[in-house]
Image (cartoon, rainbow, N blue to C red; front, side, top):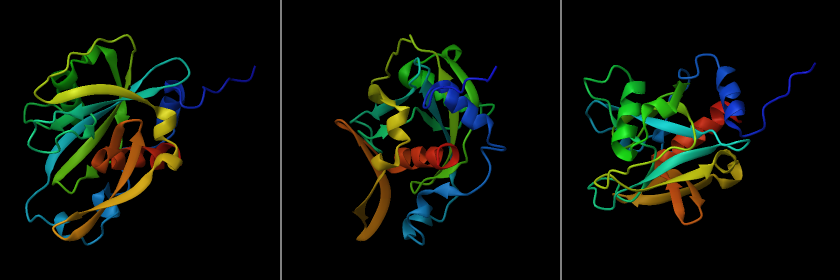
Length: 210
């Protein structure tokens, strides 16, 4: 009997695509520099700080979604921006995966026992001076969130199908110290997914769906 392929954009299909990638977290050097070669913002003269984010793929029947957050408006840096849950890797964190799980629980109250880590994507170097490890996780639905209001204003889900459609990957730019800075922009309803978050989503597409 022929084996039935998983539905496109389901969590099973997502898992199979990742499993088919040898050394999926290695490879090309991804980051903001790919869109902004030679930009002076990319040479801060100090070491990159290590961070990790969780890409939480929610296992809905047939159509997976990705859980994203809106950073609190009162934050000093990147206030109000859409982001993956995550943050700086602490010395006490055993691995980027451990850091991503810890930060996810601290920010939105999503417990680690709801998340199955399946691996990582290549590190993403942000113009803000971070080397970010994107950790992939499959999330069992039916969870309850408890947002840390000091860090997060909202959490919401976006269909994986939407995020992996290049028709929704717009190129945009803004001025930074009188120089143009380029990035991806993926508007979804009244949410604007752009910058580093959109860059990591674009990496996910290039590695698994291109």
